Image (cartoon, rainbow, N blue to C red):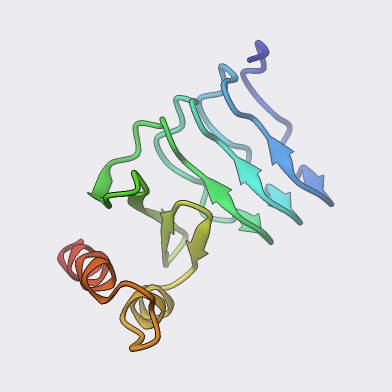
Amino acid sequence: GTAITSLPDNLSVGGSLYLRGTAITSLPDNLSVGGSLDLSGTAITSLPDNLSVGGRLYLSGTPIPILYTDARGYELRKVTVGDAEWFVAGCRLFKSRADALSHWGSPDYPDRERGDDFCAAIRDA
């Protein structure tokens, strides 16, 4: 909830970066986060082409469009990072469409109906 509105280009954070509820509206070029990146409750609408995130990505409460919301309240979002499509829901971050479909489309996924709904939303995105 601080008044942070910007970060310097080429910032590298070895651990996690929590920007939840800040006034930031865009991320710097060449941002590298070794752990999780929490952008919940910010006005972020897109991610920079050269973003690197080693852990989870949280986008709840951002204006990035929601593709699907499951019964638990997990919101599936698609963001473009460079040439890649990232899919984010709850604590899950998939850095390709194929990886997201493989996870939710797996016969071992614990709730086949929910997995099928996530896959349908991804295919329609």
